[in-house]
Amino acid sequence: MRLLHTMLRVGNLDDSIKFYTEILSMKLLRRKDYPEGKLTLAFLGYGDESENTVLELTHNWGTTSYELGDGFGHLAIEVDDVYEAIAQIRQQGGKILRDAGPMNAGNTIIAFVEDPDGYQIELLTAKSSE
Image (cartoon, rainbow, N blue to C red; front, side, top):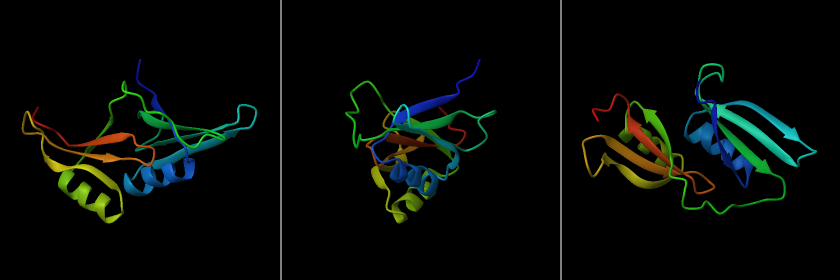
């Protein structure tokens, strides 16, 4: 068994694809409209779906926003250098929720950014010691 993907509902698919590809450097792996269901699915990731867990963005036509609820926490992405990643995201106009720095209960360097729909993404240093 393996985890295939995580799905997020998004209000503006083009804005979300732009955020995940241009700011978080994912690749758009595939995108397909489903006219009968009035929705579009886009799959993004850092590698081929056959070997990597990916992100599925679902856009239900005619819906521009969602209540995020209080059950969802965040996505986590490993980066080589959180400080450098945050500097690049800031330069590209991304929304920084928490600047890079040690987590409050340890030494792991983390940061948080927000996508166009308000979903939080945690950035963590590669090979954390915790």
